[in-house]
Length: 538
Image 1: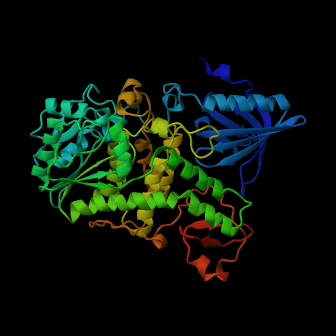
Image 2: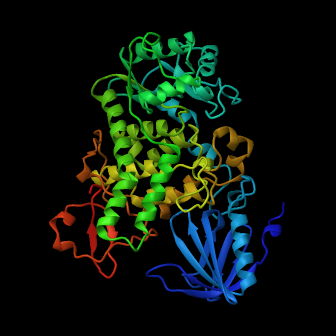
Image 3: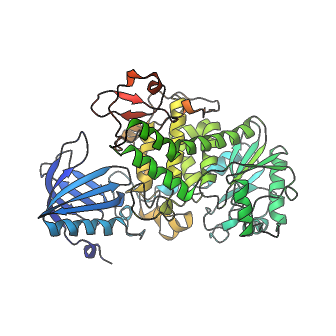
């Protein structure tokens, strides 16, 4: 397929209405294979250069000999184009819809993007899979780097190299993988050097209604206890009822009799469609100008987004507390182990490990616990909050993680080397990016598509001196202690740092009500120059 086949009209005269506070731009609109361009011909800073992959939904309206196209973007921007010509309007809308929804990875923009100052292939050396093992090996010789998955045969969603106990051979690992959904057997993701406890992640065991067992899987977790203090806790990110239903379809959880020394704790975290619906309702509430204050607060409470933030932080804190204060080993898993599991393990490391709070350490954490660990970015970030279709595999799990990190940065403003700009950049690039870092759903897919050798790494760009200076926290002061976040309602704020998301609230005087002043989260009040701080609870 040629890109030209999808471009019905490549050029038209248009007026861009970018949003409140920004001047309109009149000029020539052009569509290329990957971008939508609009320029007034004078090189104005307000010229439009939009990556088409960023378009989440296209709405068109025609009247007479002209039309209006509204582009709702994945980064939550909303752009409006007034185009001269009825046929041009319809053709441009159709072209944008087609080019913004291409599913082929190798024809996406990262495979064509060649910025100055960056070299192809750098991503292979920035955060190699054995980096984590080298750090663990400096503290203990009880763990080894296994290449049992070097050809992705054992587990399609795991990287080729994994850290496992020395006493467990590759044959036993392969059998354990056969007993776990998707082959995701328990692997080390964090070693707590203070007391030698460890955190592992996996998918659910394929226990089934017949209560199947796997001697190799049981031996693996028994060996973990021998290395890490003798006590273990399985943190299951599903409810007990969900586990019972999973058992009927071949899944389940670790039976107490089969895994002595391991206790079990259910901490249900939403994923999939419920989480996506929550995000959609949040954005709808924040962009509806017709809502009264009471109605807006009711809808904010009803979307439950801050409840998800609270539950994620609470679960991660429990995991961190178990390792740091109770001296127990932790295994985290849900069903597949690629969503809520990674959310919990990465947040727990951010709480415990000061290295993860540095710029490089945070990038390494994301690479190890999200990208290499198999979070399906291509599926989860296929659409944002504006898509008109029924969600399939979309879910803003990574955005929820970024929100939780922002909560930590607000409560501990000196302890993270990176600022809010870093989190906003990651949100943007996860959904639409010229870099290949977040492409595909697994390391296997990236290997088959040659992503690491044919696209540039986001980390290379963010680590350039100018970008690094922009993204760093200017008041950063290294903190060797664990960060224990508060999850009380008054401590959690609704993250409104996405300045592109326009909040429409009633025109009220913030000083007129002590109740309103007690709420948290920044929102713009129309017809006012002040900002009102609004809380997560109503």
